[in-house]
Structures are given as C-alpha cells and as structure tokens.
Image (tube, rainbow, N blue to C red):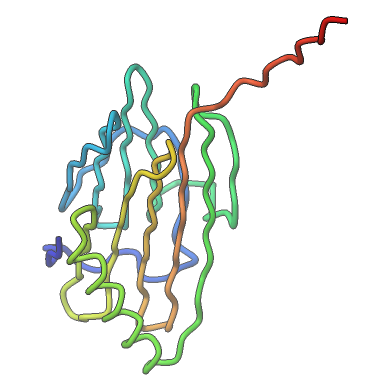
Length: 178
C-alpha cells in the first residue's frame, strides 16, 4: 500500500533516528494491520518514521525507529536480545548514494513495497524520494520486517531488518542406557 503522508518532513537526517523497544503506540499517519499465522502485526508510519507492533498469544513487542524527542538511544548497527519469550534481532545500515542511484533505488523500493500485500510505504510531500517504507513476512516460525527511511537531500537511505521468533529452550542431553 502506498500513501502520501499529510505532514511535514520532520526527521531530516539519518543521524536523527533513534531506536526503542517497548514504547506505547505513537500517533500514526498510516497503518496496515496484518495477520501472519498466529501473529498480529501492525505496521505504522509516523510523522517521524516507523513503529511496528507485534502480538502473539499473550506476548507483545513494540519497535520504534524514529526521531524521538529526548531519546538517548541512537540507531544501533545491531541488537540481539530476549523480549519476553521471544528472540529479537535488529540490524541497521546507512547507504550513501549519488542522486541518480538514490532516485533509482527509491523507485525500486517504492514499487516493491506498494505492490506487496504486506507492505506499507508513505511518501512525504515535497519530494517523491522522501519516504518511509515497511515490508513484513513470516518465515520458518519467525516474523520478519524490513524498513527503509529515505533522506534524498543527503543521499542517505537507512535500511533496517528485524526478526522476532519464539525462543527455543535448550534440552538437556539424555544419557543413553548401557
């Protein structure tokens, strides 16, 4: 799904992005509700980037990547931690692109996400290449999502990957009889 976001472009630099787990839902400009097997997932476009809410049985997880006033947690390159009964993995990278590369990559990503049944993309007014996009899937018992945050004025594209899955308990070895 592709939408034009009715707001000003507030997160104007990749360096302004922060990451947080467990935040309450923030006001969203666009949402996409998904059911992936037993998981309920809500992709949320914020005026300041994205939030993903995941619910499964009695557990929930909230990821926010946005310009969060007062946040002291910058966007990490990688995180791996336990969230309730889940294993949570997050990775981020910043791509530096020339204006031509940026325009081409923006068109490619917007086409991919807007045509995908589990995709949500929002374009900010004033630039067709200023956007935030999210794409989700369930694979091998894990819920995955990818996001892209575009900063055409700096030629920067922030890409994130998240994987959330049920923690598998370590089984003790059973001695063989003998």
